[in-house]
Each structure stands twice: as C-alpha cells, then as structure tokens.
Image (cartoon, rainbow over all chains, first blue to last red; front, side, top):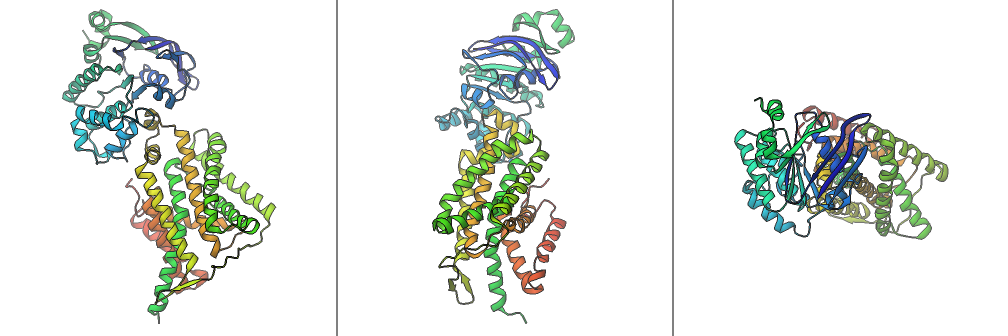
Length: 233
Length: 290
C-alpha cells in the first residue's frame, strides 16, 4: 500500500533522511523506531506532503504521491496524527472533529463522528469545550479522533505516547490495536521500542537518517544489537 | 449647559459612524487573525472601493447600494488574487515580509490613483442623500441609518460564516494552528487568500455604505485605516466582537470629543480612550489573554 524508495529529505541544505526504503501492506501495523533526532518526524512529514523530499519516491495505493501538496495526500487517504497533537485550541472538541473530515470523509461525517465518540466516550462529554482546555491525554485522543474522521486508509501516528502517564500509554497502545482491527493500516512512529514492538507486525529501526534494521516484531525483539542499544540488556 | 437634546443625537451619530469603522476593522482583524500581520493596504483598498462606487454611479448610473452586489464580489476576487499572486510569493513565508509587501501595495495603489484620478475631492449625488427621519429626540440621516443596519447584517453574515461553515472553521483553525490545519488537509494557502479576500470584501461593503454621505480622494483611506487600526488593537487583535464593539465605541468617543473639545480636537478622545484601555487591558477589550 505504501512503498518508499530511495527517499532523501531534509531542511534547506541539511540532509536528514539518507536513502530510506520501506513498505507497508494493507491491515499492517508497522513501526518506525528510533531515538530523538534520527529523522522520524521528517520522514512522516515528507510522506504526508508537508515537505517536499529532495529525491526518491513515495507510492501510495498504487499512485506516485511524491511532491504532491498535503491536502491532496489527505484526499487520497493517507492521514497523519502529528507529533505534539496540533489540535485547534481555539475551536471546540466538536469543531476539531468536524474539521477532521474537511478534505475527506465529509459525506459520512455524522456516522464517523458517532464511531469516534464510541471509541472515545470522553470526547463526547467534552464536546462543547474548547480543545485547548483538555488534558494532555484527552488532546491526544482528540488528535487521533480527528485523524479517524477522515476515514483514513493509512494512519500515521507520530509519537502518540509522548507526554502521557504510563497508564495512559498502555491504554493508547491498546487503542492502536483496536483501530487496526477496524481495517486501517497503521504506521506507528515511536521512541517507545518495547511497547511498539508488542503491537506492531513489523518494524524499521531508524538511525542517523538511515534504516539500520528491519524485520518482524518477533525477530527484532530477539535481536541482540537492538536489545543492547534500546533496551539496555 | 449640555442638554439631552444635544447629547443624545451626538451619541447616535457616533454609533452610526462607528458602525462603518467596525466594518472596516472587521476586515482588518480577520486578516490579522489569520495572517498575523497588519494589512497596510487596507486603506488603499477602501479608497479603491470608494472610487469603484463613484465610477459605477457617475459612469453607469448604478446606485451605491446596488453597487454592493458588484463591488463586494469584485473586491473579494481582487483580495484573493493579491494574496495568492503577490503577497504569498513575495513573503517567502515570513510574516514581516508580508507587512512590507502590503505597505508596498498601498503605495502603488495610492499613487496610481493620484496619477489617474488626481487629488480632487469627489462626491456622488443621490436623491436620498439628505433624507432624514424624525425619531422625536433627534433627526437621523436615512443613508447613515441604512449603513448602520447594513453593517450589522454584514457582521452577522460574517459570524455565521465563521462559526457555521467548514470554511469559517478552517479559517479559525489556520489562525491558531497552521501545521495542524495542513495535517487535516486544509489548503492553507487557499485559506490565507480567502481570508484576505473576505477582509477586502468587508472594505468594499463599507465603501458602498459610506459614499452616499461621504467623499472620495486618493488619500481618503488613511484617515479610516488609522482609526481601524486603533479599533482592532482596542478591541483585541483578531477578535470579531472586539472590532464591532470597538468600532462603535470609537465612533461615540469621536462624536462626543467633537462636541466637548470642538471638531478639530475631537479625535484626541479616541487616543485617550485607546491609551486608557491598553493601560488596564493590554490585550484589548476582547483579546485572548496572552
């Protein structure tokens, strides 16, 4: 469904991603793991058309989407839940969700909204509240709910566990599994290696802008290099 | 010394003038809210609209109120085009560049107007220009009352647009969270241009309501835009309620200032109120707390 080949990207003169190749099939949860500053968010924003890659190609659902503007990529069904949530603080929870279907999924807005409220009952309670007044966990739920409103084919989640309490992190990962079971492919961009590998089918390890390791989640959990680098054992 | 019969008409006249200030300030505050810049071309666009009303009337015999139907869409299109083709390209995404570009646009429009139309003061002759209605305690100018009503209709329409439509929600979303807006598939460049277009359309509406009782010269925009800037800051940058209330307040203050201090000193009142409000509420009457 998503095929990335030879992707080079960065900011101005600075190259952050150096020849990234990866792919993702329908129904999969694929994790992109790495510590701060290795290029995870840069990768994500180049897939989504927020930035233009220097070189390489991104194909989504059989079509080349490299260099297309972000709104056209959303229209095709590739939707991201950005790092730092980026909800609209001055709009109500309800308006935030409505804008989730601004470009895509507008025809089914009411029924999707009902589904999102079933998944996140808390958001229904907070419906008329300004999004900026929500707690961090609620904002993360809203960001994911907003992403779901576009009826995504592939949902990119950028660090959904960032800034959440351990209990909420647990809940968040359970929820990602639930979204996946609804038939949505998921690209999970995370620092949280252990919990990500528990729910992902496959994973890529990103270091210094390069994929240094990839495989099924089971293989990677057994990999001694990975254990040493990320798990400290 | 001051009687009810002088004070009340002065306040009412202030409200009538203030409604026009409010309309101009609404456009300015909308553009500020989304693009985060003060639109220096606002006064020049008002002047251009006034000339539009003038020429539609003098060359084609079109009534200023009918001209609303032509000028509002035309100025919207001009504003949309200006943002999309000139401002966006010249700014390279930097807010301070946008500021300079709008200043440049203002200079060009004003000097072209001076070149082509000279600095003569022009007015139009409409049969209802001096009609008044007697409300018992005051005589009110019919076209100015009409302008007052129309300004509120425009403000109401704008409110509905901003709160009830996806376009309005997208404009408010872009104002505070551009990256988030891109992520949900909002074409941010389009929203910038729509905001600039709607802001310019407000100015066009103000021009149509203003000209039956006012005049036009190539410099006419400056007086209004200075007051509109004051209104926007006084009401709270980017706040619609602030622009509306601030516009009316400034209108009344100006009118009463004229009454108490004489016509030439009347505008001092505006800036005294302005300074007083900013001393006690630095974010303006309805501004978000920083």
